Image (tube, rainbow, N blue to C red; front, top):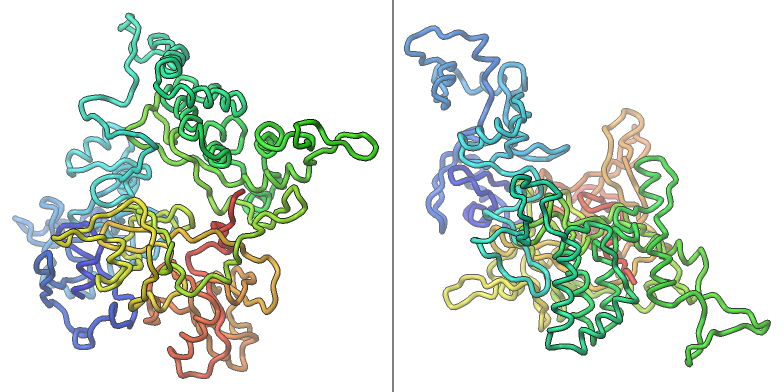
Length: 630
């Protein structure tokens, strides 16, 4: 309990909900404490007392108070909280009475949720005294008008308002942004605009009152091109710009974001053309100009909308025709190659264009952040590279223009060494206070849900020492990126997993493991079934899986599940999904391979067993993040 309290991400200063996830030594409750209550636990932060799960929780008693009029003056009954806000539960009512009221949710009392999500597995969903509330969601829960002035009044009265965007899910009192290359920290005395207004101050806020932003960009670019000390680099950048032209038709008023696209060329003026092209493909300006932002796979369109819509081909075509190989094959001297009949030889066809279009699916904007210019506020960033939504990305094999396959020469994912996240060269990217990975999928609401079990490193772990990088006082000195310079030995739960996605070093400090690029096989022998879950048991039928597919037995693909042979009254195996209740789930986002699951099931249960099957828990049905985009 002491360890769980000290590693909790719950920021409430008065109440801390903790979850005992399994019977593993480092996470389990001591047997002597199973029947205890009201114990005091001393931690490095101070002393904590075990209390009732609903202690200081928020409930709406409107209906209850209406049906139970005040009978005494002053009111000392359960309805007295309407005037004071806090209720001391009366001794005259047994706790079973309150539990009965809660079971009839919304009839007489209603719990107020901390956060509103489409689905959640929260252990204790109640909002508590001291929690940060998202005001517009709070207004929906209590049926209040969501007018901005009303919300602001409620926020001022309650003490804090959190905006309804991705900022509210970050812990630690703010949002960590890594910034763009050469970006400097903000000056709190200045705003995030290029200041420039015409003399007509009477029309402040009108488009006509602003300066000519097109001329502003021209002025900034011209001054740099003519006066910068690196004149050779500036000329190289201009040559590249004539080849990789990015127009200003999208967000034409923004100066910073348009100039930033040009800065890609100056940063790589003497570098690799591959690096330039990769940054350009991820650039939001390119995404808007060539329609790659928002392009989704045909599979995703069909699965979600039952529409047969192919990916947008614009960038897939232009990246070959304008940016790389051109329309016809060339000789080394630059002349066009011809076949035996004297005809020009095409470098690509429509099939290659569609292949590129499939590669370039899934791109979406990153969220808007501070310290950048963004006129006429929007919720998306045109400054930071786009990211890939794995659900919208095409994960099927793709041929290359030379007749081979994209991904050739990369290692197979099934051939990566055991515990490759502990091997020399393994890379971890700092995520600050966010527990959501960028390169792989996790439900967005997990980032704010303290009941979600994270992979927390022990302070005795060698990996912990590398990521924490403590100074002489023991305080962690987190680096943006950490690459291991030696092979490390696994410690405790690190030894029980095949791969990690997100690791927690300290409360509010997370690193994402960036696995090396590798290739997943689409066809293989001895495939195993992986499932997302099962529907309810039906007499004479058993439990049917809700979604299922095949996975390579050596692929790190899914969570654990063990199964017992079903009785004669069912037509299939009854699978036991290994979960929190089973006492053996290490953490959310646990993914392992078939043999690891088999070994665990043999040690976990002594019952008659069938071969264990793998179970998808949180990861998507297919892990597409490891497919290299070339």
